Length: 284
Image (cartoon, rainbow, N blue to C red; front, top):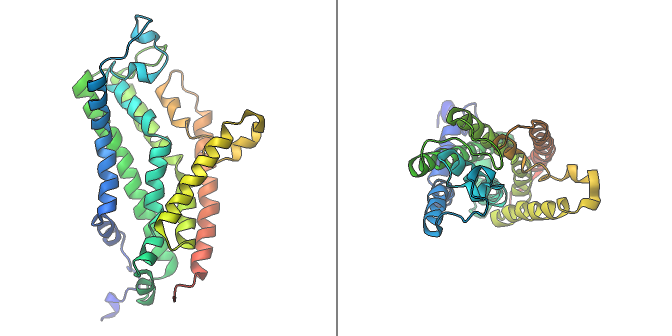
């Protein structure tokens, strides 16, 4: 093997190689396929269920996106984002990040990769980058497919704000993009925790399950008003910040808090994960 081919030299573990490797795995394909199919499934569910009954007699006076989901293509997309942001997207993030190192360990390939050798921190960084790219691509695909399905099914209308005005389609598309980006930022804590658990555990299901468990506990604690301001430290406290872009007027304070909280969690947990993995015994 020449020097240029040695896996431990610069150029080792290229991003594109790991990306292609992950895309070749059936579980990653299934995760991405689920995100693409969700808007279609929601459209079929609405088609079967029919239009929601309304006692107000006016769609603009409805107070929830559920009642307005079929008002326009933009509103349908907003409804899909509201429906999926939360537990479902957190579960998908948990599966992608939880499998990074623990999956290699469970398949007995981690020791081989490090023996070649691939520098540990480079291996971890590339895997985090690939998982993040896959998650972001999946979220974008979800939004784009939902918008296409919505426009075809309900016409080229913008978001009908519950109890408010209908936004222009161009403005709505921009808001949907910002809502998607905010939703992705809201998953930074899950990325950090998934990275930590995947290097600590040798079971990808245990790592993913840990992220889901923390998400559930965080949401339960966040629903207890008596905790007061202590709830701001919970990783899911700002999980609904994305919805600010689906209303008018828009309050950017929760969005900024969501991004800041996610970055803090990601940096702290990611640093801990890097420290642990650099000292992890993988000889067994």
